[in-house]
Length: 104
Image (cartoon, rainbow, N blue to C red; front, side, top):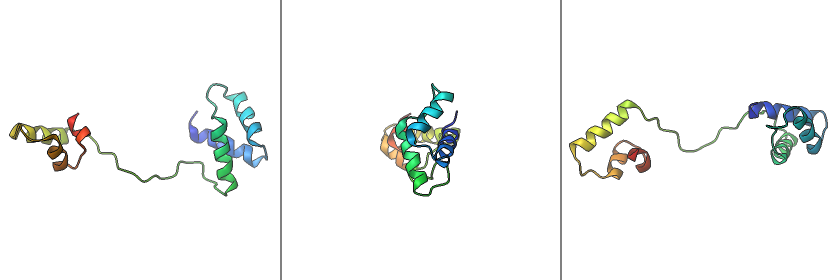
């Protein structure tokens, strides 16, 4: 079961007036091997008490994931073949990547 589906169940328990212990017991009856932890249930109860109604993940800021494409690999290979003494960091900077990702 997906975590968003568990959140809907937690929200249902919250709406019915159950407490976190009752919610944990109720969810564990149906999903004994995959139920969320008590801490997760408590965190979502707190979110719902604050007025949150959405059960989906919130958007997060952070570094965007760069895709490794055949074109990128080809370009890095060409750069290295052109100048065998090129530093890994220079290749990473040239293609707006990280040193670790470029070394793969």
